[in-house]
Image (cartoon, rainbow, N blue to C red; front, side):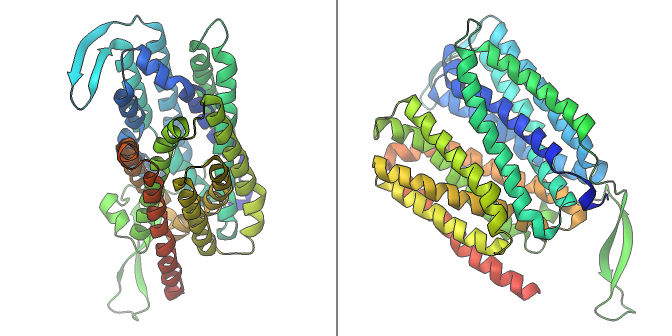
Length: 430
């Protein structure tokens, strides 16, 4: 493995920004495309869930491959998959709207399945099955950074993601009002994803060049109890899903991953409906809110986290962040404009401290030779949470209204309580 200090994190952060930027170019008008091509709100939800559904399969596989064949190669596979998916998406914008079948369903509602709509489904599914970029990027950063800098570096990774979500929708709004309409942002997404491929090839060095790992396997019966018999295993002998979740300390962290993403997706599904129906916001007001949130997150996950991570442990920041995020969701329950904007501050500090710290803890808990496999399985847990949250969020809001945010608060409160157990477990291991 290459020395940590010799590899810069900024090429990877740039590649991550490009990926997020490309996706956020299309998200603002995806709902309108789905409806124009014959779908309805339920079909839009299913379209949005295609990525996490297929990432549930692809994430662990690509993560394990990155341990075997190297991070750069698998990250390149993921980038190429994203590029192909945008080509398919662009084809959906160009081909004629040809009806395949009319559907009248009690559960799915009334919609028309058309060829462009089918292409969009395929594009999102293909991007998901090759969507190992998150898990591989996390493993890459674990390869090249020290334990002391890990939380701060993951904060910078989150900053690059949030910057993509700030600039992408803004550029999409500018491009979509030209004479070329919504096809121009999709063309830009294709070009940006191709730029990501080139940057991966040219700028990213390999961070994981092991071909053999010395792995402690069994205790030597002829040695002292404290000694471990070590043998060299080929990297192809990487742990699968069940082996990963049985690793010491990993399963509890994966449960926390699941709970956090479940609450996030309940929020991101329910909040736009709450903003439109209860707060009487328009799309501009909602866009301003999320832009303000992203800007605050850039500040918290950048200079603020870099400062506090040198003074407090990852476990302390996870505990504090989960408490702040719980308060955020409780404030949203009351549904006033004033408390909604106050909650924005709690969200930024809660998420900004909690999420990078949790990624840092997971990377430190997993052994170096298994980073890709562990990060891949964590992607499966987040994908599963995204699927459940996206589907359940709308139904919950229709029954409980702002009570949905209380459910999200209860979930994050569980993370807050589990964080104490994590800290206690860590002390036991020392």
